[in-house]
Image 1 (cartoon, rainbow, N blue to C red):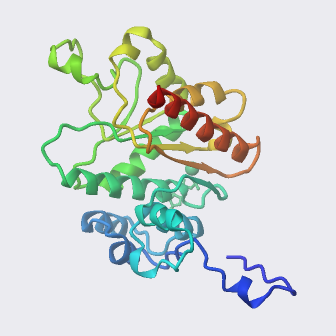
Image 2 (image 1 turned 30 degrees about the horizontal axis):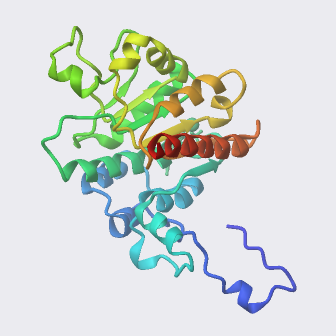
Length: 278
Ligand code: ADP
Ligand code: MG
């Protein structure tokens, strides 16, 4: 953590409450401070992860939420609430090999485990979509995620051609199912494949992505470059949950990624409020 202490900085300014939770010093703190399910804690340990990497130290407390007891007093009540809920949108820039996959998979799995145990009987509805630019990356993410989710009821699926997306409730009720739909808590896909499924009119009508509350863009600089941008934004715009939380992960800050992310979040909010406001 870089601390900027300007020469002329006043005492009052230095004491200004910070909005970021303290960095995570060990994975044990996930259980103690963030109510991480013990099964996931065991999986982290069993796979030989001892010390969080830098990006994990900073991103995990932000995304896990529940930092109740150690959150520094913030002046802004809204910001406090967001941090307690782990509800911030996040753009994270960290070098290749720094462990970004774990940094987004642990909070996803943890939150979905918590949300599920509150209502065990509900059928699995897709809660999260993870996009990455290549098929190879999506399978790496699925492998890493399954290690972490081992022994939990969280299902993680790599989307493939020919699979069907989750049906809308009405179609389930009418038994209109030639092929079983993907039943996964977390779907991992390239934007092109998911977009082509949504783009198919028949599919689009039947598909329900209403339950999706988390969107992860891995290699976000690539997903938002001109080659992938349209497909990525099309998928993003199909997610209708007003509380959708987006996290973007990148090794570089290229291609105006922050600006694009902000305007995508903004545009989507405006569109949703227009829809709900008529
Ligand atoms: P990135 O996406 O930032 O390029 P990855 O998520 O692919 O990096 O992780 C790179 C490697 O580091 C993987 O083999 C992963 O298993 C390993 N790794 C991640 N976090 C840790 C950790 N806390 N301790 C040790 N190894 C880790
Ligand atoms: Mg990566």
